[in-house]
Image 1: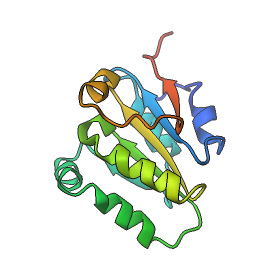
Image 2: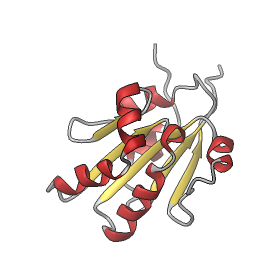
Image 3: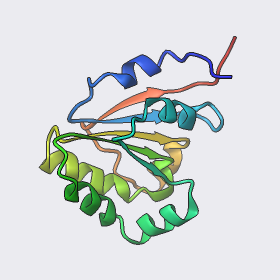
Image 4: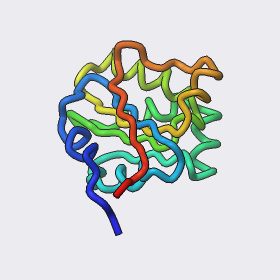
Length: 138
C-alpha cells in the first residue's frame, strides 16, 4: 500500500532545474519508493544499494559523467539513491551542473547527512535544494 506524500508534488515539478535536489530521511521512510514513483522510462536511476553498481562507481566516479555526456538528450533527469555510499559522485554532479547548466536535473537520496559531512563530502554549496522526508504518520 502506498500513501500519498506531500513531497511528491514539489519533486515532480521542474522547479530545481540547474540545481540538485537532496531528499534526506531516516531508513525505511520511503525515499526509494518515492523515487520509483517519480522515475520515468527516459530517466537514469542509479541505485547505489546494488553492490556491483556501488563498487563500479566507487572505483571510477567519472563513469557517471562519461555516461551522461555520451547521451545526446537535451535534458536528462538523474536519480541517485543512497548517495552517501559513494560520496565522490557529488564532485561529478557539481562538475556537470557547472559545465552544463540546465542540461541535467539531479535528485539524490541519502539517509545520513552526518555521514556525508564526516567524510568531508562536497555538499554542493549553492547548488542544492534539501527536502526532509519523515516517516508516514496517520
